[in-house]
Amino acid sequence: MPDTIQNVVVRADGLKKQYGDVTAVAGIDFAVEAGETVALLGGNGAGKTTTLSMLLGLLNSSAGWVQVFGEDMVRHRHRVLPRMNFSSPYVNLPKRLSPRENLSVYGRLYGLGETRSRIEDLVSELRMEDFIDRPTKTLSAGQLTRVAIAKALLNEPDLLLLDEPTASLDPDTGDWVRGYLESYRAQTGATILLASHNMGEVERLCHRVLMMRGGLIVDEGAPGDLIERYGRDNLEQVFLDIARSEGAAGQEAAQ
Image: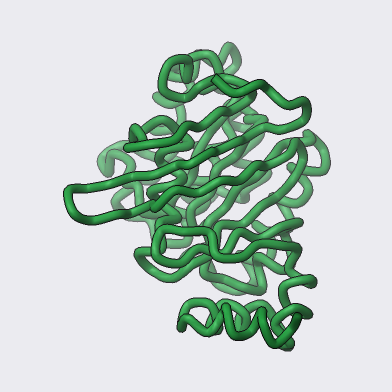
């Protein structure tokens, strides 16, 4: 078992996930420090969601290891799961229940002592008053995204894993949610690891970016540093270079 390094919240070494002959994650190493917001970027099938699932302990790795808050996620994830949470607009909540009822269920699962007051705070903060008591099946995609974020924040996590946190939100609401996440990190010192296809979002929120292709981390750095290294105007252009396998050439040209 590797030594715990102070201030590192997430550490992965040789992390790999194999499904038969298909390699979803091909052996990656990275660390995320306390208070950082870090993005996992890559095209569809690059390995982002699989990586997040292994960090949560939902999937066991085929090789390598993951530590979160110094604990091995295979043997001791129960020790750190109360300090973590996860959001994805692609994970469905029971549709017959209202958002309030769904959040109440999760509050009990998380062992919260003041579930009702915590839900009321989130309803206000995430502007959910108009739909909090409607059946979940009647909500729009944007409303469901806000409910998913509320679920992820119920236990006020120290580590927040986000998969497409502003998917399906209109530009105004998406901008507001990004501001809310920035404020949450600043006020709590939380660490955020997110997967996103919104490059403007990543440039705004993230201290560092891990660029994935074919299950590997092929480059990393601060958004501004990557833009400069590849000689591009914005992160979207860098993303396209790497996704289209032009990343190595871009790096060599920059060096």
